[in-house]
Amino acid sequence: QVQLVESGGGSVQAGGSLRLSCAVSGYIYGSYCMGWFRQAPGKEREGVATIDNDGTTNYADSVQGRFTISRDNAKKTLYLEMNSLKPQDTAKYYCAAVDGCLVATMRTSGFDYWGQGTQVTVSS
Image 1 (cartoon, rainbow, N blue to C red):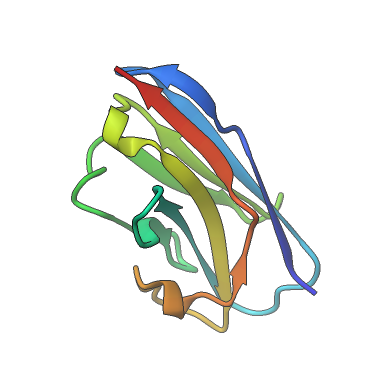
Image 2 (image 1 turned 45 degrees about the vertical axis):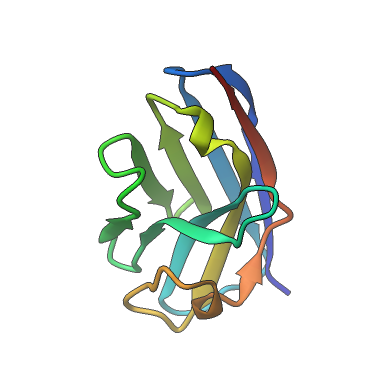
C-alpha cells in the first residue's frame, strides 16, 4: 500500500514563501510520476505542477515562474517550493502519485495515490 504524507503548509503574508514536502512510503514500482494539486473552498481540485519519471516538469499557468516542483527518488520525497505567494494561492495542497507512468497529466484522474493534504493560507 502506497501512502503519501504532506508537510510544510502554513500561513504566510503575500509575497512570502513556503516549501511543501511529500514523503512516499510503501512499495511503488517501476517508473512513476508525481504531482501537486490544490483545492480551494467551493472549487474543484486543480493541478499545480507535475514531474515525470525522468524529471521533466510541467506547471499550471497561474504558478509558472513562482513555484518549483522537484523530487528526490533516493529519499522518496516530492517537494514544492512556492515563492511570491498570492492570496489566490490559498488552498489545501495535495500530493499525488501514479506508478507505471512516463509522462504525467495535470488531470486528477491521472493519479492513483493521494495524500491527505496540507493547508496553505496567504494573507494580503
